[in-house]
Length: 320
Ligand SMILES: [Zn+2]
Image 1 (cartoon, rainbow, N blue to C red):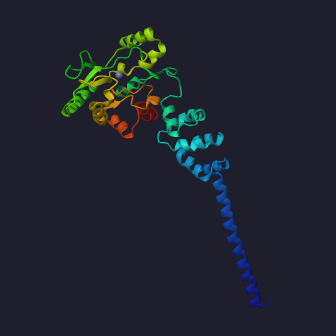
Image 2: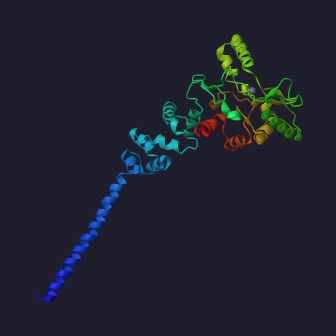
Image 3: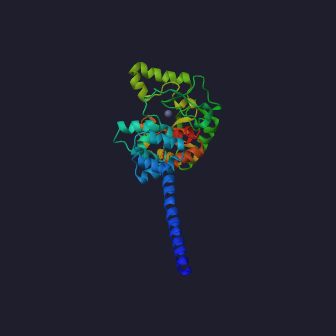
């Protein structure tokens, strides 16, 4: 063999080896990448039946291994993907959301979340959760959250008869806020007047028991709160009307109500039982019942157009 031929042979071999190396490493890298991908939740969720988009949404949302593993342990359910895309989704309620949606197929995902968050998937008074009284102006009292029997609001003060009927009281902070709201309304030619405010446990007991005695428990539960469950016991709620316009049936049509709706949050007050929200609050529309929560929270609720029950579930309980 000539030297030249030998050189060529060596060169060919070199090229072949090089090609094998290149192809090999590409394949190897691919296998490696494949292997890596198979370890991801995205892959596992797709294997579980979700499509790529759904898998990506679940991974993006949950991030944590523990939760993603728990999603993999349950049957594929695209309702979960719909639920996590809603703003007020709370993970600890997932089971309840799914159960509620299953029983109420026509309810929108948004409503399912709102309803479960405010406990409306339970019967009234079935839960009786002792409410967190350390929350001060953000105490939640409703048909699920109860005040302790010995609860007494701090700083209860008389509302001046300039702004209310005689004998009305509120906590000092709420009272001051009401007075400044009253003055602004007055500047618009509206004279607000409080006709009911702080009620202690004994008074609430009397109110409720009187109705119960005359009309039965069902009716009493419809129109009054059970003792320990009335927001009036917190000293943060008022029933407010306009002088000359004090019928519960027509106050909603008054300029004073419209003014309150647009401005009360600027003074820290919120409409507690709005129209069309009975399915969340558990109370029929009460245009006259306003609750003090402070300007910051009132403004946020106003901007997001949510009830206090929804606010409480998502921004207080869920973040605690
Ligand atoms: Zn009221």
